[in-house]
Image 1 (tube, rainbow, N blue to C red):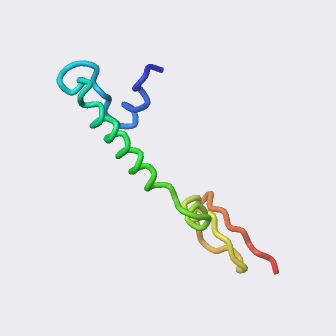
Image 2: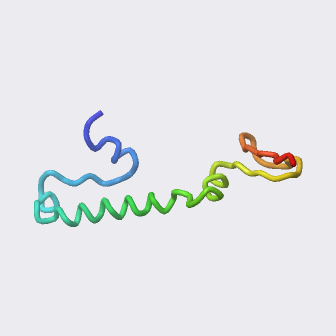
Image 3: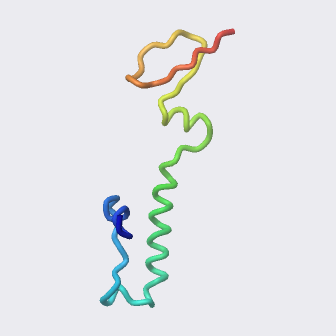
Length: 79
């Protein structure tokens, strides 16, 4: 796979190699744009154990499971 194919398929613009926007003086702009992309993706990552479990469709409790979607995981706590 060529360099930049993954970025293109994810919808990210490529840094041009020629033309006005491809000039070295705009390097900082491109670095900051990349950091903006990273910040957007980082905001999508769940925080903490409960956030991760919820995002993965995992729940727990002492009652019998009820409802949920196909593929959800329910951990029943037996006392």
